[in-house]
Image 1 (cartoon, rainbow, N blue to C red):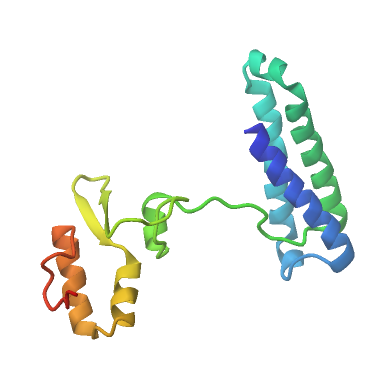
Image 2: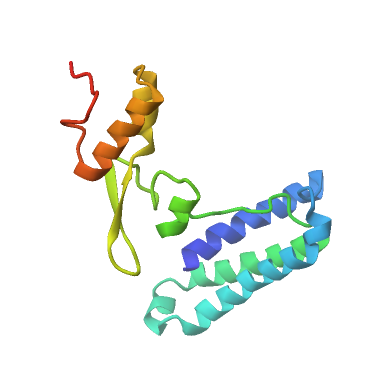
Length: 170
């Protein structure tokens, strides 16, 4: 948590410096109150992290915790003066179902290596999702929309391209 706080705080601190030179991101003024509130919540989270960290962790490397706290204090003060240039300075890949709804190929930071991924559903059961690159590759190879649809349906059902209808094997 301290490392992530330090990285994110550092990114926003640089963003305040850039804002002091180039101005804040478009729409910042309309969103200033909410943006400063979010940055303040980050700073509060760092303080909470320090307050709840196991003592042995704080003793092993106290400087990273104090640096994280300091960078967020600086960032919040500078943001109040200059704003921020970047509305979002750090992000994690969308995970789980939300990533699928956002049309992401994967539900994390890993590459999509297989033809099919199986998503377990909260209410039970599962669904098969064919790698989106498959239809793009088939189109590139000259397959028409109907053949692509049939091949994708086959892969979703069987987990393999072997034996798919209308597949030109070479």
